Amino acid sequence: MKKALFLIPAIALCVAMSLLTDSGRLAAQSSVPGMQNLIWPADKVPADLPPYTDGKLTGSASTGKNEYMIKVMETNDAALKAYLSKLQGMGWDVSSSTYESVARKGAYRVEFKIGTSFGLQITIYTAEKGVWPGNVPEVLTQPRGCDLLDIQLTENGDNAWLFHFTCQGMQQQEAFAYMDGLLKSGWSGDRSMVARTTTWRGKTYGISVEIYEIEAGGNATFTVNFDLQ
Image (cartoon, rainbow, N blue to C red):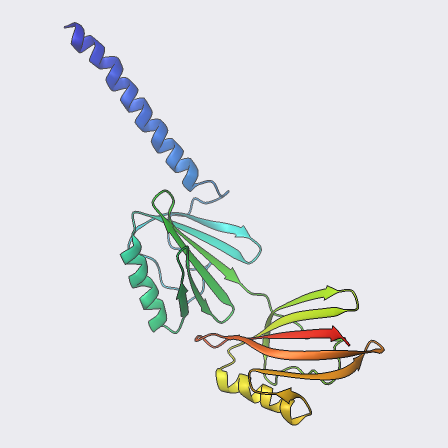
């Protein structure tokens, strides 16, 4: 009879611990403010990003400027692999590493991170439209028909100046055509990288333009360097 009496507190303790564990899990899943939406947020994500159905959606919310996060539990690596394969079939450029998988298409970059403790975390980044810098030398022209995304400028005094620009929807042949145009206008090099010198800001600079990346989904990114001679 005494043993039965001792079992009651023990059972109560186990129930309490279970509740605390569940509460902690729920708190972790809802750590992002407003992450209460339990339905695929079709109005918040790209139209051609299909719902992730092989798991339990535990929440979604905006996590920053042009950034949206979705959390899924009760899924696994095989389910994620099948989903990424589906994206590839829909024209997304998909790459994977040890830590994450990334899908790119147009103005969108989607990161997938999966773990035993936090499930699957899907983060969608939307690139902003860019504007061609107005103070670059005339010899550096904007690619024709380029829908600019994500221009990133880095300046180191007067000695060096760097920027990256991405043309949305630009295919490999269009990127090569841009480089061919620069070669015909006096640049030296080849289709992957061209260079020349020019006067800029009253000084002589060496300029190089390089094709940094061409995604299967149709985005071309270029790197431009200015170096004081």
